[in-house]
Image 1 (tube, each protein chain N blue to C red):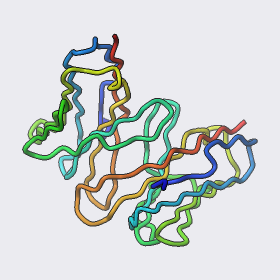
Image 2 (image 1 turned 60 degrees about the vertical axis):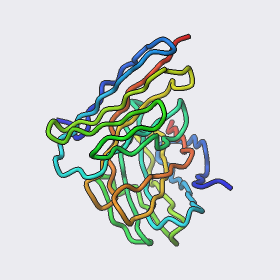
Image 3 (image 1 turned 120 degrees about the horizontal axis):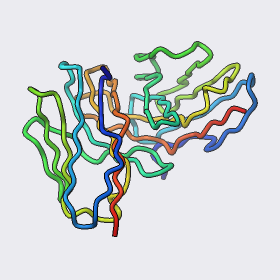
Length: 114
Length: 109
């Protein structure tokens, strides 16, 4: 009965490859997010979707393309991977209504680009 | 100036001690404030929201000072299990939450 799940948990790949990370939540939330946490532990938002619509798109290279097929899923596709993309990518979800909305995070995908 | 700033620590404290962390923010339009806890190689989890009037949950007390633009977290009677990184976070709307880089706490036996 995992709340927010991500696959894969670990991803090791070569520079230049294309890879995808999947995220699913079973909490009935309407907003989902992708965060990147680098080696210095800085957790930075990349994208946010509300009811399948993109509402936050931070300054992220366009090699990163999120896709939300429905409210419960938010995937992240990364083209032409670079060394600097190595990080932990967290998916999260929350309810949009109200201001004090707890974000529930997935376990993270540890991406290593060689 | 960073949007959200925290002392990275580490704070090394003995069991039973009281420890406090501050977190300053630059966006005066921030509306909602939070403390998250992140264990090593795990995801962040909400510890507590921070309300204008301050709030307490067991050994944990959170305060908000809008005039000086900071939030604080006080942990009383520290336990070994409190060892973790504590991330402050705030939201200014559109569900965008900005996180600090975290303060590492190590409780020593």
